Length: 378
Image 1 (cartoon, rainbow, N blue to C red):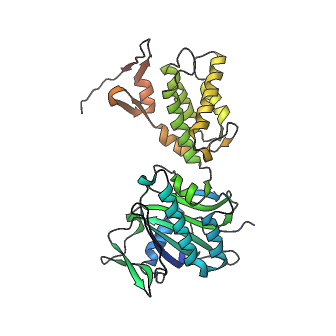
Image 2 (image 1 turned 90 degrees about the vertical axis):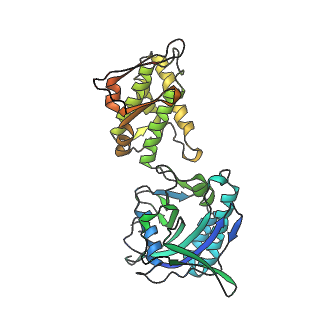
Image 3 (image 1 turned 180 degrees about the vertical axis):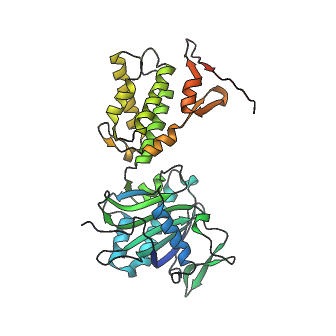
């Protein structure tokens, strides 16, 4: 029987150890705390405040599962050391904070990364059954609300960070977005293999900042059906927009629209797709001879493979799980972007019915005809 884990949406967590370090790579300020942050008992602030953030991340549908990439990673090594001896928590938390600071400072996107505090919590599942390790290590970067004051104190010559309320209530975790949070636990094999879960609310949709998972955590993200579905739809639209000359004569607007429409219809079925077969079905919608359809298929496969991040690229023969709901949501609206920043958008079915496309002509110009009974100027 596979080991159980607190990583999959536990009902309750108890914080055993907690510490905060300052990692401001923009002002080159790295201040490692020499003492743990007082966290108090369950049912009080700030225990429940930070517990709420951790539980929120573990229960968020946009969280990503991931696997550590190598045995020598800093975070993986520190996690193992803390699990073996919780008394090493403070020292290993400093090591992790140093790793994060170095990664942020050395990242080519350093100017885009928010500085701040990194918080670490050693937790256990408060409702755990006997017989498995219910502990996990949480690493958080959070934008605290105005209702929370962070204090930096010196106790016996050591820095310590503590928190207090600035008003007479405990702020809910839902009031502010978690910047980034990862929770690490014992390796799981069901429903798939994973060592940790990650939530990054600073990134559009469900992506995770590259510096955070690749360079800092040194892990690989597991495949996510929703992200893969959105990726396929997004990049197919990009392909027909930027690569209309993959066959001669130029891929017509009718063919381009047919490819996008067919892609949406196939993904909405929710069945897994194999990239090379999927591209073949899309190419078949083009009004071209068989050799030209094969050229489209090959070009589309190459484009989709190259479009993915290197560590997440989809192989041509790989079977990819599809999220039907994500396909429906992304396919509901169709948008045409014209010269001068003009946009035509609307329900996809209505757009196909009422907006006719013709061209491009020899000069590269496209004629758009919109059929409507009503017309309002807004």
